[in-house]
Structure formats: C-alpha cells, structure tokens
Image 1 (cartoon, rainbow, N blue to C red):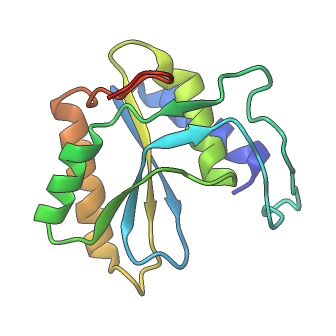
Image 2: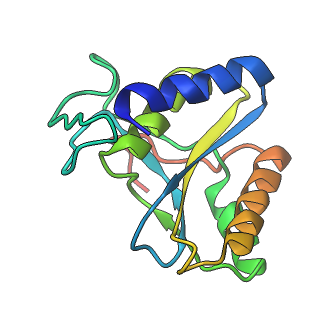
Length: 161
C-alpha cells in the first residue's frame, strides 16, 4: 500500500459496511509476535519509499491534528485473549511512522473519534514467524474483545498515576 492510498481504501470499506469496530492490520516484517498497537502519532517519516515511491520525512498525517491518538480497543483484555489462544503477542507503544501508523492515525482522527466506536491497529508478523492460522486466531480474539466492551482507560497527558 501507499501513504496516499491506504487510508482511502479503508475509509471506503468503512463507509460501505458501517461497522461498530475497526481493527486495521499491517505487516511487521521481522517481528516474532502479534503487536497490539497502543498509539498512533501524527507524523510520516519513511526510512524507505512506499510502493508508489513516496518517502515523506517529518510530514504530519493530518496538518494541525493532535500529536497522537490512543487505540480505543481493549488492549489488555485482547492481550490476555490472544495469549490464551497460544499466540505470541505484545502491546506495542508505537505503530512507527510508516504507512501502518498513517492508517492508524487517520482512522482514529476520523471515524474512530466518534463516541461508542472502537478502533485500533494490529501488526502481524511474517507467516514464517507466526503461522497464518495463528494470526487469524489472534485477530479474531481481538475483535471478540472489542465487541464485548470499551477500551481500558488511559492516562491523559500531564496526569500522574
């Protein structure tokens, strides 16, 4: 996919199907685990060109948009459910700054910002690291958890725990 094409493709599918939950997926080559992404940041910073040759550096995903968005998926419940399915998994604190983060940020900025909607991003590893059947089981577990309830609360910037 590309910076210019990925979000419009997902947005079109969302408009067509009007879901309650969106779990966007991307490939995390070199990873040995499914990664439940916690934060999308408002920056495009590509170390390599995308499939159309675009290689933005320090460009906002949404000019004037917030610095970042948290996932609204129930990450800890999803983590437990995926572990229970026997699939290696972790919560990741960043979706990076490439096309996957771009999609995650645009999703949260637009569709996912409405009350009652749950949305987030999951990176899956290469099939050689985690078999495709296990990846499917992991994503299904995340979707089931998202359909059961709202995201766990997160601290707002500047608060103390």
